Image 1 (tube, helix red, strand yellow):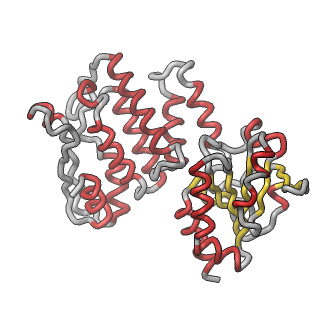
Image 2 (cartoon, rainbow, N blue to C red):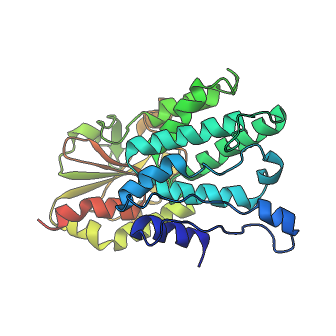
Image 3 (cartoon, helix red, strand yellow):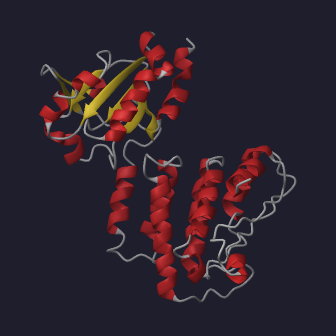
Length: 328
């Protein structure tokens, strides 16, 4: 049984109050190095029986026994990355408030060189900052990119908010996080989506808010992107999407946001005619940064008021949100 499986079972099914250590290092490492690579997980209080309660508690206490001063051991190894991956999986089952508090507590401990049961926070500053930067990179990889199964805009906002307010990053180092935070706050889940103009292949012009439908998928893509083509094939085969379309509960708006309109026109034969296939004139979506498009494809789901239900989600999230439309 893998470490992540143990964590999942313990959190979701409450099979045990104690987590077990795992080994993520090379089998050829010395016993001392191997011991350092064991992650000592915490004992969840027995009175917390509901999975959500346990996840909320672990959001704040998962790192209680972890020595953040041992930067030599955890930098550049898979050990910490595995522990972080397991932690982020747990956070997916915690409340939004505890997700944000947990991530900020993690960054605070990494920032100060936290050592359990000790007031001594002295570490080599250069090593500690290098580890902090690596943590920042990992959190971006896990939480910010749509190809990550743990992608979560709200959790990444909490990370960026901490970084932009911290003294451990210089003003110059905060420039990129500040820009990313501004982008993450755009079209946030629960807010109204930003309007934009679009053009159809025949030259007809319209805009997002002119569309009327109980649900609307925005699909930003590039026809030269292999992942985009795979996503299109999956959407074509989706029973949920096709049923919602047939019941007129859904529109799918595919948007080409780039400048090479002729390349877009040549790709239209691969798109179903019942979808609304368009391009963004003058690429204002990109130039004005109306939507955060770190990578394509990018999927959004809007309700009948153009409120964002799913932001940069995967197809399974979209399908899950559309199930009520299929049951009408």
